[in-house]
Amino acid sequence: MNDKIFVCRCEEITIEELRMCIKAGFTSFNELRKILRVGMGPCQGRGCRELVLKEISKATGVPVHFLSVGTFRPPSKPISFGQIAKMNVCDVRIFESQKNV
Ligand code: FES
Image 1: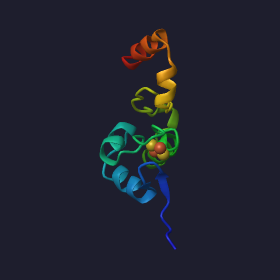
Image 2: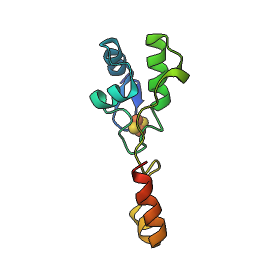
Image 3: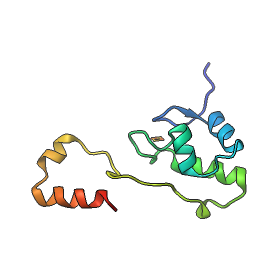
């Protein structure tokens, strides 16, 4: 039986890998994103961000609400090419302007 516990299912990162990296000194979400790719899967961290922050908090003693949630990149929600194709020009301009926020 496989007893691995996945923290980030999109990138298949286990709790053991996460804890090793935190123990090695990577104690921010962005550092862990760069080294492990947590939060870089199709859900953009919606499935793992909270779990990763809780693990950082547990290891460092810093409350979760004081931790940086990392950098978000648009689209914050996956959308299909069909939805983009149905957008009118104004929607596309709004979408483009939000990319630089
Ligand atoms: S669960 Fe981590 S990016 Fe989706």
